[in-house]
Amino acid sequence: MVQCSASPAKPQQSLSVAVIGAGAAGLVAARELVREGHHVTVFEKGSSTGGVWVYTDEVEAPDLLGQDPDRHKVHSSMYAQLRTNLPREVMAYTDFAFDDLAGQSKDSRRFPSHEEVLRYLQAFAAAFQLHKYVQFDTEVTAAVPIFSHSHQQQPQQQSDVPRAAADANGNADVAANGHPHHQSPLPWPKWQITTQRVHHKCQLNSTEQTLKLEQASSRQASASKPPKDPSQQTDNMLRSNGTQSHAQTDDLQSPEGGSQPDSNTQTDSQSQTAMYDALVVCNGHYSAPRCPQVTGSDLFPGQVMHSHNYRHNEAFKGQIVVLVGASASGEDICREIAEVADKVYLCARSWQNPAWATETIPFGHQHNIWRRPVPTHLAKDGSVTFSDGQQVEEVDTVIYCTGYLYTFPFLEDIVSTADNRVAPVYRHMFPLSTAPTLSIIGLPWKVVPFPEFEVQAKWIARVLSKRVHLPSMDAMQAEVQQFYADLERQEVPARYTHQLGDKQWEYKDWLAEQCGPDVAKTEDWRRKMYEATGQNKREFPDRYRDVWRDDDLVSQAKKAACKHSKELRAG
Image 1 (cartoon, rainbow, N blue to C red):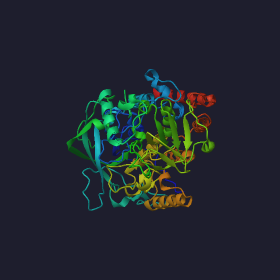
Image 2 (cartoon, one colour; image 1 turned 90 degrees about the horizontal axis):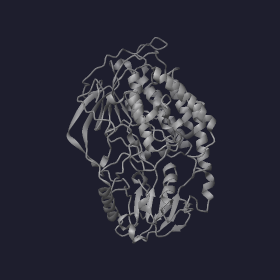
Image 3 (cartoon, rainbow, N blue to C red; image 1 turned 180 degrees about the vertical axis):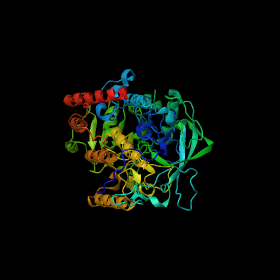
Image 4 (cartoon, one colour; image 1 turned 135 degrees about the horizontal axis):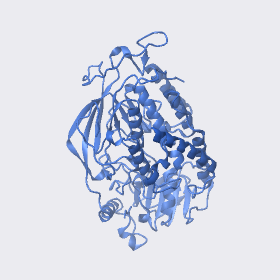
């Protein structure tokens, strides 16, 4: 395993850094970059901090599968009744607990609502005064690397960057952070960032929203059979009751707390361009639906949609619904819909609890949810056939809870996202061709996200300041190639490249080691609580959020939170 070399205990340089996104990743990236002495500008397309946690009733009608590249796009995938599937103690950043919300908290449950998570993120932003670095209502439309030693356009700014320190053998031109230092004072690519101002219109009221969704349903399901209940004829869809910076060109700040109805936006035709020393991408990966190709989908008369566009369960009253995908959203949404639906079929290739694969009796509060393998055919008569040959007739709606795609529309030919593998990327963070001045936070999934964002951000900030160094380009390329070869040998599909699961702890602790001795590894209670929650969820999927057996770990978490809160107040 290649180890990154340690450097002096203090930052060696200060860069201008652009950050895309002011969600959970972008906020902690901004904090860590500022702490390291960099000059930060955060570009946020929406009107408030929070990213995907900013809820909206808006959906991507009429394209509820989210496959048309020209569709109006909604960033958030939150549904109205969503609660977290991790306890608040585990979810929090390492030095800012949910308890630090103080009087702002309105949901004290261990597994709170999405509104509480948004309040937490906004409290985090306020506590560390991050709003002053954010240009709200600003979309990044292009990010272009500019290499000073190439025939491309020369950078407009040059940073006063010292040459690399000599290595152990006294060689001053040691190759660190992926590029030989003798090529130029700053051999790494700078970034030409082009932005547009976004104007948010007023969000549709509930009546306008219902009419819009009904029109989408009518277009997509014109051949559908009549509803079982005439009252559903008007209810057959998802009803819904800047900153100071070296490169700043304009002050585009807007007040905190605005709504984010992405489809009700328009952009200025006039764009702005500025140059930055580095770019950190924090645009998330829960907004672009990933849908399977199922035979007969184009002939199926019912509604076919992705869970990205699910908000409420009222529209499914009395229906027969098939959900494909049984990860967190599939397990949750099937139970929510089953409260009002006639029958619900949850389909998957594998299950969180292997024992569920052989279940034959229905489950759920209404005992009207059945488990099935994945569908292989949707028919024009409204039937759905599964891989084991079983069939369900008169299906009203098929919902794909099948995950999301990585997308970077502002980057061109920097990384590949084929089969949902972002490549070639070192340690899930640094694209090889532009390391270290381009980095991505948040690629790993099946992890505890917020603390992982935090340690990723610390490492990036310190690499950019030359407090620590990346290996040489040859060494990083060799490790990435070996990593991909290992996955292929283990027959792991490319789309699972960034799935960490139990490997997340080793990954996070490795990152902490690279940052230096002042960055602690994962607390033991946090790992144990994560594992206890998973076990509880597999045993009690209907009530794991409200019944648990890890009170001893909760006590440890509260002690840790109290310590960090005192440090925060003292600082």
